[in-house]
Image (tube, rainbow, N blue to C red; front, side, top):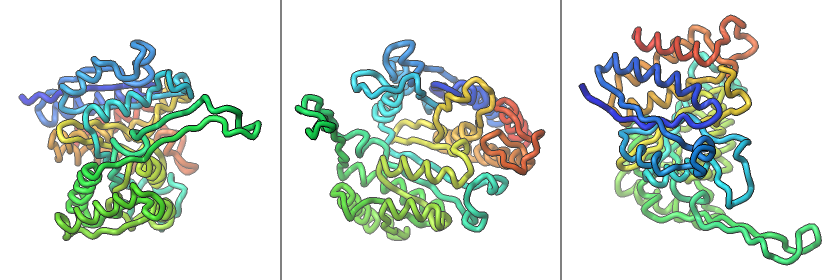
Length: 371
């Protein structure tokens, strides 16, 4: 029997609740595939700060490096919010583990389940054919560039003085753009063969280099794939105006962070968006939503993005494509039957069909095992 090692990071807020539902699906997969998942649970984010004083303990990083894949639920919350740069924040743990594992490519599929069209704020005709993949560069740009805050500037802005000064540097190396471009072009070859490279080349020097490198990789290695350049502000508009035009979007770190959250609302809820963060030897899977501390413990959180993250893990890390397809189909079947968590319910959803986290996990697991 094959054994796969998974580092499991339940995190904060609703994280532990949706993790329970992911474990149900993983145990069902063991039955379907006759494999064994060896699961090591570890701390990341706010809970790690509370228990160890740091958002990414050494033990967690070691467990992640030893695993075949990392599955993360959610981190963060107002309890740990601070503007003091000397205090730890949960997000530092996430950025740190991405950097340490070399996870440079974030894949965010955005596919609309037909049963959830009414959950989106857009008209049905705008949503027809929405099926895209956002490829976000994950270890460069503003989030990892040089930064500083100068507090000793004399005078304050309110007194007419300059006050504090702060800066963040958007920085990219050529190799970082090359490797993310290759991920996007390879992905497009397996889809509909079209890549939109998103930048701000009319203003930013880093974007001008980005565009030059993407064009070179395209010409030398992927001439069979269609390539379009698009400015980030226009892309934000086009995602709402005509989202079906997109097949694969590739962009830098911050632009990708913003655009993927915007695109998630095409599906009706952030609770439906999964993601895979891939490197050359490691992979981390996580839902696109946050820790939702306002509903933590109420057992009403939507676990489907977490389950779709498991689907991505089965596909990309373990090559279990049949089971990944079956899990996606099971989720679609449950939605087609009308079952909804509160975030994806609309005015036409009967009260009897609005269920909690555990019930949704049970229904999907049963449909998955029965397929």
